[in-house]
Image 1 (cartoon, rainbow, N blue to C red):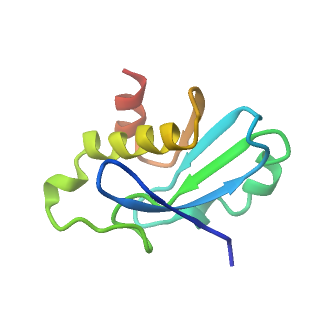
Image 2 (image 1 turned 45 degrees about the horizontal axis):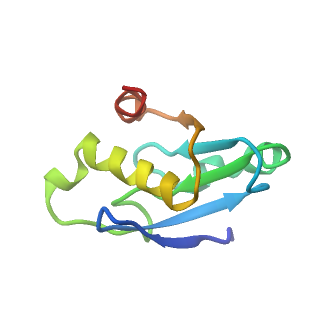
Length: 111
């Protein structure tokens, strides 16, 4: 089983997050797809962690992370807010974003 860190965000949710690699290494945030979890990335995290700071959250509504009740709580801007708050919490100013089929989220962050 993967060790997860529970992180409370100012967006009102708590996310379980897999963290790996050195804190001073270039950061990469891995976003799972639907209906997956951080475990989607289990095959590549060890390799990435050799020279990256890896952050693989269970996004809101997945696994044991918070599950807000309203449909509006899952809008792309809310998910983007979680990811930016997570990066802020971890002191990450710049990161590479890797996703499965959450291209909408990646596009929102890139704007």
